[in-house]
Amino acid sequence: MKGYSNILVAVDLSDEAEQVLEEAAALAARYQAEISVIHVAHALTFYGDFPYYASPLDSELYNQEEIRKILFKELDKLAEPFDITRGSIDVRFGYPPDEIVAKAKHDHADLIVVGSHGRHGIRLLLGSTANSVLHHAECNVLAVRIVES
Ligand code: AMP
Image 1 (cartoon, rainbow, N blue to C red):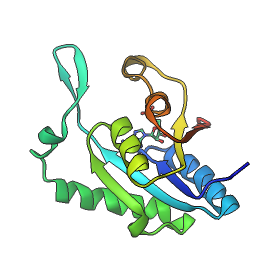
Image 2: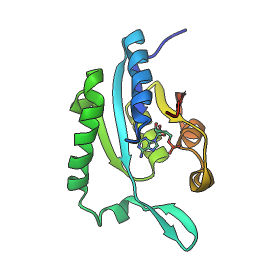
Image 3: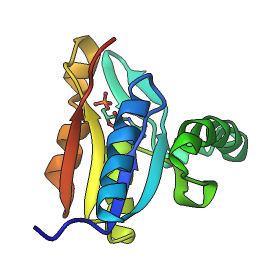
Image 4: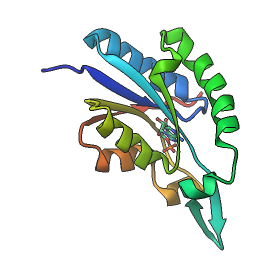
């Protein structure tokens, strides 16, 4: 097996993010791969009964720099125990699966690591991020099974 040289890990800043990052960091150490982190800021809103993600244009209504600052603070805290520094962390705005796949393509990542768990209610309706990334990515995708505490 060839191994990996450029791993992209997607974190959503929920309680599960650490488990996802831990697995990605272990793989990066094992293969001596570069590791980078992406978090996608998105606005979930409703059109009548239908949920949809606000477009990047909508997100320009918010102060992206302020949001970015707040998110970087959280991401720095999360990434620090794994020796991942700010230069390897990216915050984007938009629909998470699209942004994750686009960054992986742009950076020539050879593995995307995401979390995966059971779905309930509205999140089932929206489909899982892991599933969507898996269907659109051009590289391998590892779905880390989340252990609910
Ligand atoms: P979900 O299917 O939305 O519960 O998310 C499952 C996994 O997709 C998470 O553990 C992350 O790896 C990734 N993910 C979900 N939302 C985001 C986000 N906003 N930014 C980056 N990664 C995300």
